[in-house]
Length: 406
Image (cartoon, rainbow, N blue to C red; front, side, top):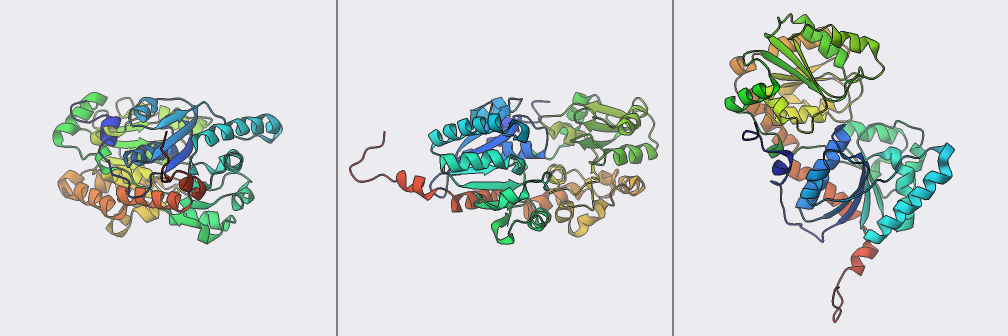
């Protein structure tokens, strides 16, 4: 399989650009160096791509993980472990640790602090104030705590991953003129379209029957993500073992007996359970269709873009930012949330697409390339960070006549 699909680091090396302005010195943060969710994947891809363009990125983290080697290989500087979460009952202890973080960041002489999890805003505000650098917050999800008012002070600007996310946060109190929409995107070269040989190799790797119909769900295994709908819809198709296989990749179910029971009763030979994957390309190469019928208001719908980039049809739900991704003729791949019957109908209509609509894969990839180009996404992030960088530090780095840098 390794000869068919480049590893994550190899594919990330493809996007190298010369910086178009004075390179930025960026500090950002992540809870874990692993692809446990969409935010962590976005942080990995965006930071490595910005480094590839000549910017310097210092990534602070709480817990190490499987992305560490690739991050170091691709030139991202790492500092950790660092605590970001604030608990009022431990306020003094946590604030003291935040001050230590701020001193570390101040020594880095960074231009901007780029926060990808707004729930860590107290940490970020302490660091921003003490280190003397502007704070830009990237809004990847809806407000999930009661600290929204803190976001109206001490923050230079916001980026939102969709128009839907901007609307949600403006309703929570952020002025609309302080939010720039930067749709998520993925590097196309990281999600290559499978050749017939790639597909056979991926299925051998996963021990899947070569002729079976393969449905795929990857991500958080929870009711909110629509996994119960996925299981019910797939079961209703009535595949015999080896005839159709549902691949579910993600961490174990937590505190949901009904969902766990639904997974447990799937017949042997009709389901393949896998842990969370650092690289989802082999899964996409093996699949005939991907399902992402979320029950919750999705901020964007990254799974949709990943799947289409690899030329694989994906069925989403009419919630949140997903409707900004599956547009035009692709609206046919949207189903109502909590409607396993509608999902089953959509599955029946697309499973044989390689025969009934053989150019669909190319159309899907072109849709991503046209509407969510990765280069434009990186340009937009860099523009926002550049617009709000520390001018004092920029002036301080301009070489004066007769002064030699050391």
